[in-house]
Image 1 (spheres, rainbow, N blue to C red):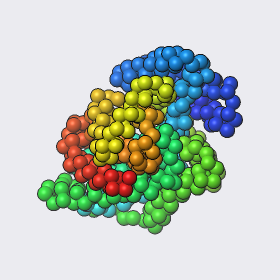
Image 2 (image 1 turned 45 degrees about the vertical axis):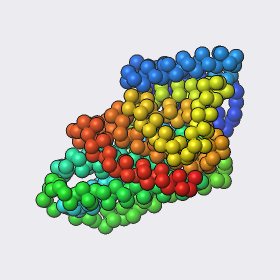
Image 3 (image 1 turned 180 degrees about the vertical axis):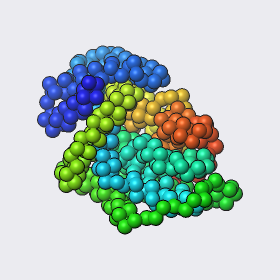
Image 4 (image 1 turned 120 degrees about the horizontal axis):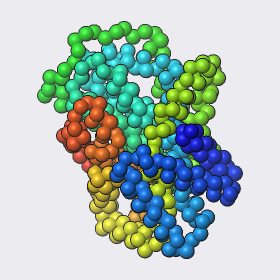
Length: 443
């Protein structure tokens, strides 16, 4: 019942985006409040407390400014584009599952099981391409594929976090990129040159560092030879990058032609691509099973995200035209006037600090991005967006309470601090320094 309600709300948002009806917006706001209240009991303690505080603060600030129900409704639904993206994007994984691509990935990984460098390159490459579509599920799926390989735990934590953290930098199908571009009003076509370029650079740096790390250690690998790679495997592995990049290009081209929101376009593609796939493959029975599994397993576990995104959007919008919001903007402007380097370092350190105490990055981005003017900061919207995404990526790896860190920690049976700081701290320090240096030069 709850899953159907959430999906219905997301579909209603897509209708409202094109209809632009005030009464539909009010209905959406009511739906968002119901979804928010329905997630309170199941959300984790820290997200629940912060979300309730932000939502209550949003109500208080809206009332203090003398604004009515329409302003409150607009604030409550401000992050629904992001929530819709988050809910619908997992549908893109259905064609990948139906097409047998995971079997072919496993065949190639088996081939590299005796070569740590090639295995690392394979794992990080798979996560780099599948992360945008499967989100955190990509890490879990790859781990399931590797469960019989008996790989070193530190090796796996490096591979998983380096591979997935680069996805955060560039993919328009990932919520982090979506919310940043939404608030800074940046076109994905303009952003991709920065995001994808840095992501590839960081991926290469991670693989080079792994090579140096592997020379000093005897990594445990299975001596059994890998299974043979069939012609069908080769065909699928050629098709997979084409499918991924086609989805990216379609989204970028559609945004350029229609001027529609990237979040809306990606959500529409998440609905249309699986339907197109099953229309060609005619595997309707299998498709139905995957859709039911998605509805029953993927949607109900989003209580934390539902609470955080709705409350953060409301709180961020309510801060507009307040002395506190103006103070944030003034502080950022003064800091950037002193040095863009100090400004970028502040964003990085501040986001890492807030995520360490359990505050989701979307709260930081919503509050700060809505108060910052790139022109006043002496930079461009695209550079500001990539600074934020660099901080988001680093904090996702380092924070011991971030879902990405917690997932990898549980899979490799190492503490969150170990996999964040010990296994990946040096890598993050290097790529953060590289990224900030490059952005400082070109800002």
